Image 1 (cartoon, rainbow, N blue to C red):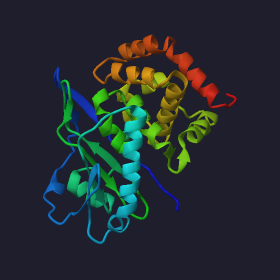
Image 2: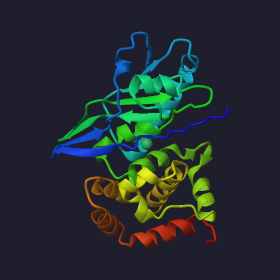
Image 3: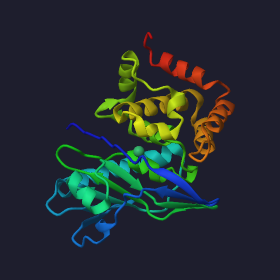
Length: 272
Ligand SMILES: [Zn+2]
């Protein structure tokens, strides 16, 4: 069976409320889904799934549970994370219904609204909202990675989306490195320096940046280890300016950004 995982997500922006609180700034977010009384519900070990009666999600719920439970365990194992909370997973039959009930028609969103940075990171919500129908089946590790990695803080898009894609491995059915190699050949990749600046993500092509970020993050993790990547993830921040984030990267990896980028492209194994 062709398993089509395709999660476009949350170009969420953040503002600092206090030193100890980070807010997810998603002004479009609606909570009408909470008023819907006839959600069908199914609990599994680490999730509560909510779906429409007579929908494809209802038909496929066993498979969806299996995919998410497998993803959940993989995320915690690879990133060496712990989690006590269940994820509320909402499955919508169409973009339109999703937009009406939660405010966005994107394929998938991780909703956490606010985290308090104390000894234990606590988010106000712990939800995934996804489209699931014959054409779009936004399930898999991507959105759950955003939620489960919150104890690492909220890094710049290059790393948070890159990490989620690293966990997904595939973009539109093909390995992220295959996409990165294709865009490298076509000279369509963005510079890493450009992607380190969050505000530039407003004007990028998602078909390129998601697999590109995933491929770059995979390269960093496989070449220099998860420990260094975790330091880079935690050290960089959306509240810091580009110069500071670059400096943190270069201190951790002991190389200029341009050299890391060149080595990643070499690693992709393409003449350029
Ligand atoms: Zn994402």
